[in-house]
Image 1 (tube, rainbow, N blue to C red):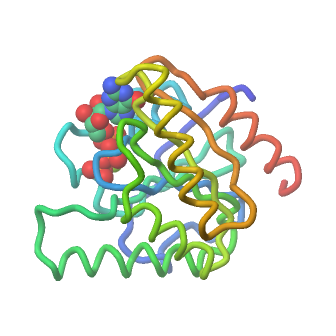
Image 2: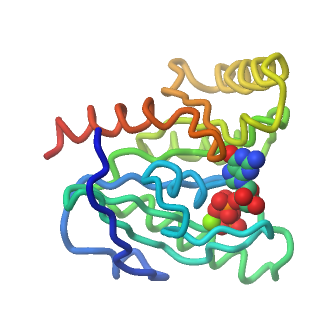
Image 3: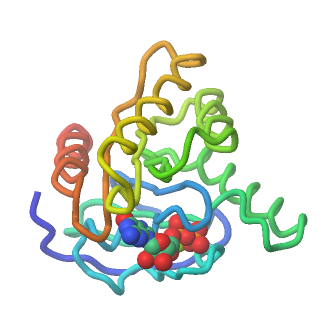
Length: 199
Ligand code: GTP
Ligand code: MG
C-alpha cells in the first residue's frame, strides 16, 4: 500500500472524544518505551508525526492520525510506566481499557513486544486480557536491529510458545525495526487486507 497522505487529528484523554467517523482504526500499545510512536512514524515514513523520546512515558494521551483519508492510526500511552504515581498509572490504564472496549471501529490492535527481552509477564497478562475483551490483535516485535538474528529468533519463539499456554491459535506476528524499516511492507499489506474488507 502506498502512503499518500497523513495528518495528525487530535490528542484526547477519553474514548468519547474520539473521531465520530467509523473508518477502520489501528492502534499501537505495549510497554512504555517499546517503540510505539517510532513504529507509527516508520510506517508512514515521517519521523516527526508521532512524538518519540528516549525517556519512557512520552505518549500520555490517545492520539489519532488519518492516513490516505481512509483509515486511522492511533498512538496510545504505554503500560507499566514505573516513574509516575499509582493514581496516574491507574488513570491511564482505565483510559486505555475503556478505549479498547468501546471503540467499535478498532479493527486491529498492534501489541508491541521488545524483541531483546525474554517473555515478560506484564505483556502476556495484557494479551490475555485482550482475549477477555474480545479485541482483534497482532503481535509486533520491535527493535530487531538491536540484537543478533539468533537471539531474535529465540526470543520470538519463546514468546509465541508462552502464548500457546493460553491461546489455541496464535495471532499474526511481525518482526520490525523502526531504524531499518524491517517489517514495514508486511504490516502495511496486513492493514490493506483488513481495509479491503472494511471500506
Ligand atoms: P512511550 O510513548 O513513552 O510509551 O514510548 P514509545 O513506546 O512510544 O517509544 P518511542 O517510539 O518513543 O521510542 C522509545 C525509544 O526507543 C526512542 O529512543 C526510540 O528512538 C527508540 N526506538 C524505537 N524503536 C526502535 C527501533 O526499532 N530500533 C532502535 N534501535 N531504537 C528504537
Ligand atoms: Mg509513544
